[in-house]
Every structure is written in structure tokens, then in C-alpha cells.
Image: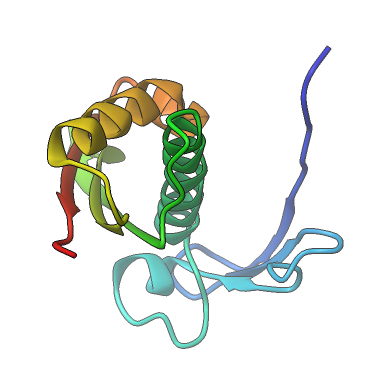
Length: 147
């Protein structure tokens, strides 16, 4: 039995270069978001793209996994900032998502650097989106801010 299932639908009209789509995600702030090739490779013009959506998924998932691992240590983060950058490259003449780079900045009173990095490593193993990206390069740059 699954923990959760979520669906989204994109309705696309027109050719790739000049066409556009709308994402339908009922009950979500993403509902009605525009998507286009131009937003993917150039100017967003108020639209999103798969790489932004994957970056949002990875950063939010990793934040939750790290908060869980810190909570298991009875530590409450004052602030976790997780930025994900997903890269679209050309591989063998095909657009390919090749990497996701996470930059984590955390303010956690009373936590030492070693424990923080252990929790980050455990979160990397736990995060379902990180595991989905297992074939891609995932790098993590984590910094526990001084108090």
C-alpha cells in the first residue's frame, strides 16, 4: 500500500518551440501554471519548466528528510534553507537531466558540525526524490551557520 499518490496533468498546444502548456494539479498552487520550451531554455516569461519543478521537489523533499533526521536527534532547526539546481545537458544529442546540486544552509542552535553532517548524509539516503535521481549526479554542499 502506498503512502501517497499525487497526479498532475499537462495540456500542451502547438509545436515545441512556440507552443505552451498548462499544468493541472487540483488543489495546488501549481494548478494552472504555464510551461513552455522557452521557459526551459531561455526566458521564463511567467512560466515554469520540468527542471524548476524537479528542483522544487528535490529541495522540499530533502528539507523534510533533514528535518526528520534532526528531530530524531531531538534537535529543532531554527532555519533550513535547501536550494536545488537541476541541470539539463545535451547527452548523445538528446536533452538529458544530468544532475541536481543541493546547497544547504542551516541555523540550528546547539548542534555541532559533525552531527549536522551525519544528519545531512542520512537525509540524502532517505529523501525519495534523491533516490529517484540515483542515476544522476547529486552533490550536496551543507553549512551549519555559526551561532
